[in-house]
Image (tube, rainbow, N blue to C red):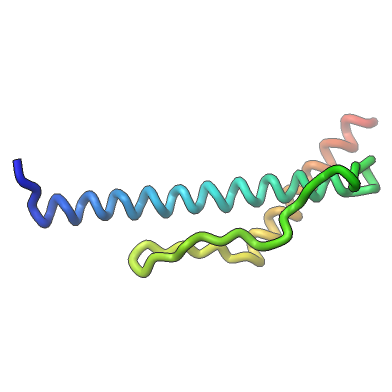
Length: 96
């Protein structure tokens, strides 16, 4: 059966939604990993600064005019630092 333009539009919309979801998952994973990197580098909680890598740039994704990807770098950094604080608090409880 041949596809109609409506079929193509629906499949395109599904592909765009999947792209947006994947980008959001990528940014969430970046935020979580960055938070753990920060916690591992925190000398106040026994961090291991010499052997832990870290990101040296903000995460990016290729934007699409119809399926916007907006990482809000400042918000990602704030979320990472907030998560870092949670991780450090969990570490402090474990050490107590």
